[in-house]
Amino acid sequence: MKTNTEFNFRPLIGAGVLLGLGMGGFFDGILFHQLLQVHNMLSATVPKTSIPNIEVNMFWDGLFHAFTWITTLLGIMALWRAGKHAEVPWSTRTFVGSLFVGWGFFNFVEGLIDHHLLGVHHVVERLGVSIFDYAFLASGVIFMLVGWAVIRSGKQREVEHVWHPGMVKQRM
Amino acid sequence: MWITFALLLGTMPVAWGCPVCSSPTGVQVREGIFNESFWRNAAVTLAPFPIFAAGVAWIFWGGKPRASNENKH
Image (tube, rainbow over all chains, first blue to last red; front, side, top):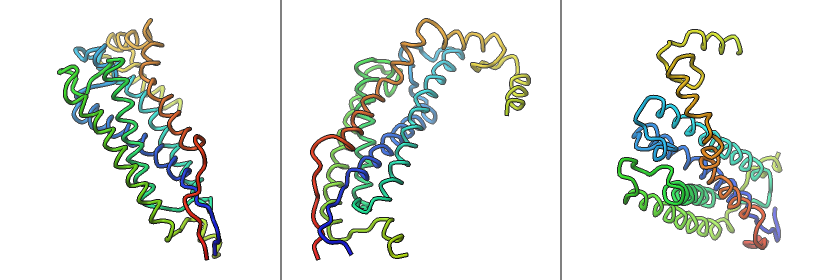
């Protein structure tokens, strides 16, 4: 039985954001780079007009995805650690909201840097800078705002219904 | 594992263009990757990640720690 316990949502939010970053990166890579093939990592500076250029882009896609994979791994590790701390409420809303914050953060930062500042690729490469690039940025902002709102609602709700994986260990 | 890798390399068709392929296309691919732009392209590819890391670090360790509520009985 807990009394006067302070809850710490940060580890769960941090883990969720890491996983959201990673999953957002994989969503971008799988959908835009591989399934739709509308752009690759350096498709604006190394146009996909020949087999070697396509392969070169695939290499840099692979490097980007390697770091996306590492980000996801760090998220899994952070989530596991969060579950071991009694002061971290195991809040579904907080976690799901954090996933959206992470995904939105990925879209906004990656979109701003790669599509606009560095111009190494665009959402639909053959169009150059287009409405799709701005929509991608907007999706990042919207995801972050929605995620933040869901996190806030999770914090309010979990005050009364606190559970975390460590409770099972305590009962045993 | 290294035997498997060596077998793979040895059996790759000449026409393939992968970075480790021993073909004219493979040579072009390697030259397209490992050239004077290599480090620039690496920096550009990984540019968003320090910002991701800074954002996550701020979540874990930044700002003032706040208690969301107290569970009173």
